[in-house]
Image (cartoon, rainbow, N blue to C red; front, side, top):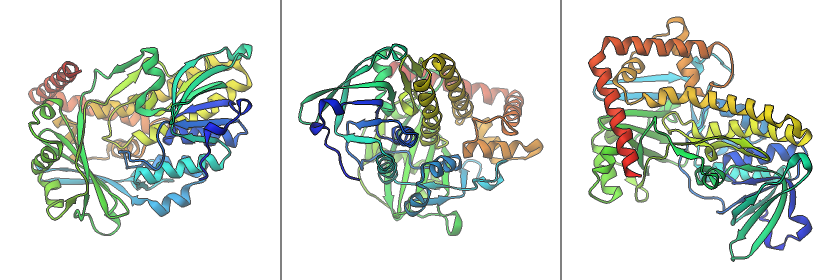
Length: 445
């Protein structure tokens, strides 16, 4: 991808129809789609690609978006095919595999595991190839919103790597800044998610023991006493391993992150066995509670997509999919608003409702993943009335459309609550532990 030098742009060139803050999956997706529609788009990022990022597991419902972007064939060259999600519990001595081919929608029976540095760079190159102007090493420092209906431009103030400043003018601003949450921070509308509290520690290993055959690329989720592990095989032979833990457990760390990570791995026999002969590629990384949501995702002349609005949890590998899906929906909203600003309020409401519905569907289950009731249901699946197929559909990312999935997911909730009533002391302890974790998380901030 030819790197454009923003410092050489003339004052006349510092104008566009859509200005996108952030070159991650959300920013590259909405930038490419709007450029395809003939919009003059500028996309900027404070860092240069390729760059490291966690969150390497894609979902089957990413497929139609990637095909729409025209990068599907390139993805197959860099990705490890993933046909299923596996759930393990040493306490139950059981492993259950959910094949994506058993979901209600059979069109997308697999996904891929990817190195995010390669994947994100691929999307960014594609964005540039579609005609968007892409600039890296550029920090947005402030925004002064105009009035789209009155043809008043929004003013975007930038700081370049060498310290120089620039002023750009745009009709519309898209915040795709990820966990930097550019607009939400400046508007004071970002809130820690008080319904959820987890922290994570992770690293990459060489020579981990994987599944064999067609199951080699499957993601594994393994429960243990303090949370759960992910095990994600990558095509270059490395394996991403991470533990998502209760904050009280993470607070007990009395050593460096790498030593603590290895101690944590030893508490999960399934993961420890797979890493017996493996070597950690680099020091482990620990993160605090990363779950948050912003008060709104759209307003006069702007839209937030992906993690710039909210992030829930990596348990179902939903982050990249939610980012790219909201960017795909957002591209249509931005294009329509630019054509007719009077439609903006209705379009923003519909966008907000659709995105929140999908996130809520994921969130309900994510919040309950540590629960022994959910663990019991996942490890003894039954496809009565198609409930198991609906859960697989959720794991595949089918959470936005009306159809056979949603009513069966509501039925799954009923089954969960009935099981909780049947094991009330266990369910109460799980609820109490969750409230305690949230309290600990809030006290740490």
